[in-house]
Length: 275
Image (cartoon, rainbow, N blue to C red):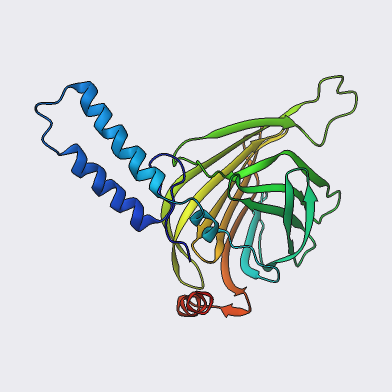
């Protein structure tokens, strides 16, 4: 398995390597620079950074989002409506089938309620969402053009990436120019996350968008070798400023390449099985 990469300048997605980089950078900064000019110091640092980043490969981010047909993840799925009513259920999501979009093939992640998303991962494009469907009354099939870039190969922690596209659900008589929907993605950083399987070190990614009616934010918690171990979601009404719906989802079990995972020990065994 691949264990190191850089996503953007200064971001190595493997935490141990990221910590090592910071130590290396400090050692360079603490060199005796008494006899160097400012421009020489900058050149030295740039040379170091270029050497450090070009040596790393850029495939490890895919360890945080594995793609195998038949793999599944089951979550404790708790959502809260605007009136305060809360409901918890099991939500199972499974990769079943593929679909071709203008940017290439994408994998269908289908849940036990009939909702689905299409994800892809390319070495030169990162993790993208191409389409989705929510199984509910009035549910619509969405195709995203351009595709939603959940995680870029050159992602920098703490930097927001924004783009816009025509909103899918346009009002009647909107006129020649379609209303735009605005998107923002950000890798916010690393943290720990408690789940029924155990405590994971995760990369937290925020995806936010604005429609004519609401502001929406969704957080993905990605753990190495297992994928999405948690999600948070909230929609805020633009008029009232109140939360319309909220979601907290945490993983409780997974099936990865035929291995059932309900504990961290079982995940470690799975990692050994596929090495």
